[in-house]
Length: 184
Image (cartoon, rainbow, N blue to C red; front, side, top):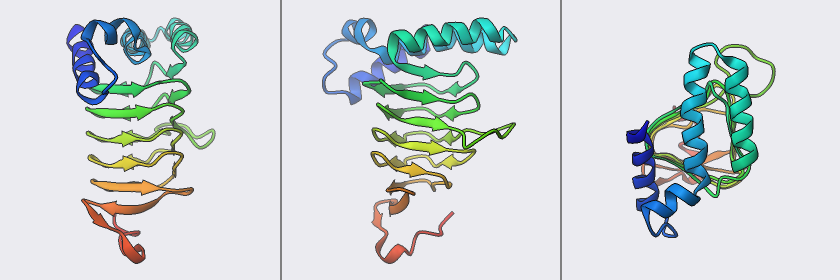
């Protein structure tokens, strides 16, 4: 657990210009507090102690404004910047070195069963207010624009914006005339 939290703190120090010291990040960043509690709730969830896991996750939500379902799987080096209003659903999977800004939802689209939340690759940035919905894949090295609504897979290295989100760049190349729209 300490290695995972230390990786988060180091990632935050590298990527948040407002972070001045590791002790400040540890004591004052809700991202860290939500992650610490999620490590415990995820353990409880995996040991079928569902009620206790959900109770603790709701306490964390009350304290931090960040709701991470105990069933969600989170990688290393996660920054949930400002955090308030972030929701990460039960079957969501988040890779390593991911930055998630406030108001983001990694959610489902209805009452489906099984895998119903997004899988986010490594080195992804998800802008403020973005809604990433359904059992879709967000490719590594992708960027999701603020307030985008993403309901389809996003390829590696793509930048998507809008409602519903469209690819505007892929691996640094502009998507003029929507030529890259159908790339998978």
